[in-house]
Image 1 (cartoon, rainbow, N blue to C red):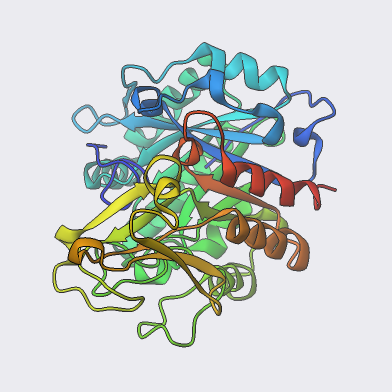
Image 2 (cartoon, rainbow, N blue to C red):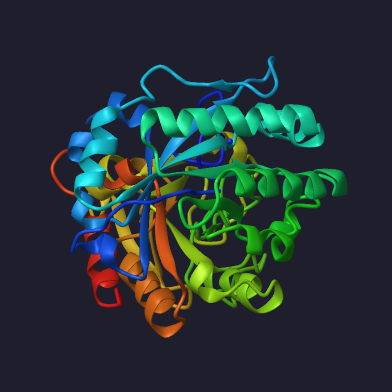
Length: 380
């Protein structure tokens, strides 16, 4: 999950959903899901984005990121300053939207804590109890586990036991349980045993983004709908990832949510799509759509281009002042196309984005509007 990690919108030090509400006539009444990851630190962004800015009528679920694992006192949880936001819960519930607390994030220290907690039955039980107390005390409807990632077979098995314990504590249908899982778990060490996890979960957020980024050797598409045959790495796509989960892992389609990115990656040293970059890690930045990308579309030397095969836009800096650069991002057109494909043509259960604030420009949210517009066409 793009989160407190180098794989996302914000680089900070930090990585299963539950829910029940009475649902009025709104988006939340749909059998499909439109889930938003809302980050507590977005309140300190410029422009700030808080619970007051959220268009709840466009959502069915919110995952509130992140509650943390205590790295020293294993089994305990850490509530970061600013995480608790009562208005988020009350406003969401008034609109029939379920709010879930997301636990973990992309920080390797969080992954290490997950490894230790899941391996010890006593510590695991304490963790589950502490999470339960937090959920009840603060009025959340559920929990989303973002473990990035199990790295060996023991981790993989321990992850199943952790999720079983959480499922036992948070029984369905009173609560929902979900996980955020990378687009291709096979490329992440031993990763996750998705077929074993799926029966324990109400839905899975498939992180169908970050196919290219600062860790890559070349500039590529962050979140392509389809695999471009010209991609030298054949890094994958939303189609290939959703097929993996549904057809190979056997997850029921209605349990799968597709992820889309409200951010992109700027490869400063690249001049074209698929360009090699010798130092991607130090010359590639995560950039938000609303404040960093939208103002540059067909302006300041940046020209909009499109990968027709991937159904994805990108920007090229065409040499103003000798400058170079390539930005992979999603626009309203590509965002709507993803939702129409996943919800309509393929019949999957939902869509989500990382993260809700990232397309906010101070007054509008173009990508969320596009996502919701497509979602409405496939609600029932």
